[in-house]
Length: 104
Image (cartoon, rainbow, N blue to C red; front, side, top):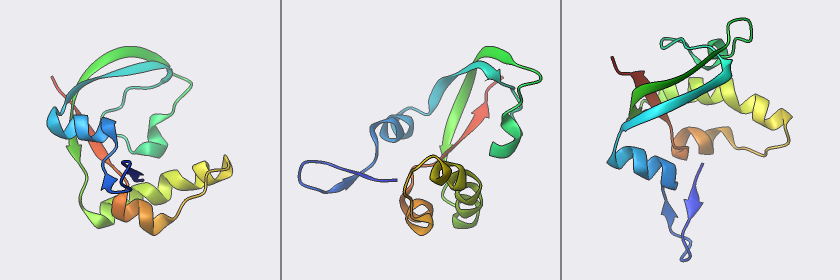
């Protein structure tokens, strides 16, 4: 959830710092994803109705600790199954997290 500079000072990851500076982005969806703007993580993957699209979005940092914990608890077990080590509390406290809102 964190990265360090040469002095071992904690700093945000580059992608996160870029989104904080400029929250507008284009989300490039590949064929295996279904566009469902209101979906949570576990609802986004849908191989029955694949879509490819470039979707204009706005990124908003997620700061609410309860919401962050719920999201991290949904995502990290699959990462652990793929061999990633993780500390749930560290990810909730320090992991960069943004919500994408589709812009009309």
